[in-house]
Length: 64
Image (cartoon, rainbow, N blue to C red; front, side, top):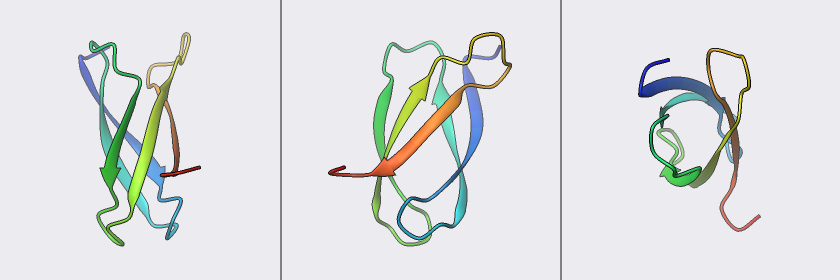
């Protein structure tokens, strides 16, 4: 697995598909990015993927 992976998600605000980078070496498991379409803040959470090649990402609205 590479140190940085690209993972697809759907914005929890507007529903538009997007892609984010996941730092696989860092201990950080949660970060905030703005949606590229509606500019609303999205809280991302990296989840252990086990044997899968790509990590799983949770995307939720900030404040939930």
